Image (cartoon, rainbow, N blue to C red; front, side, top):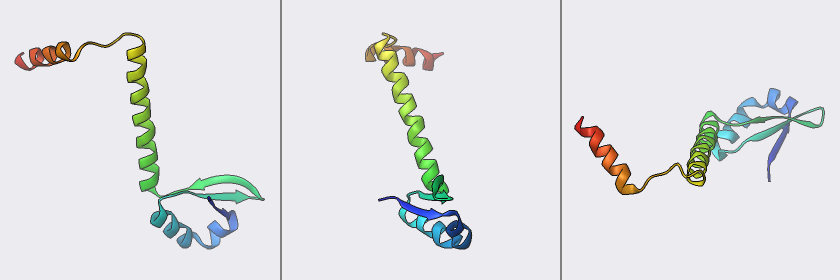
Length: 87
């Protein structure tokens, strides 16, 4: 279940919220006037999340290449790599 705090809680209990984010590696959702406003997380959690998005993007590019026929066999790829190393 997500952790939800008010903007007043963030202002008044910053250290507690920061400790929670670092301990549990999950965001805390901040409300303003009773409505969702922000998601707060540790830098480590943010970096892991953005790294995952980057990886998913690279996987999508690879799948698109396969779908469009922009691939070569393993043996051809290895031959190309070996040829480049000799140059």
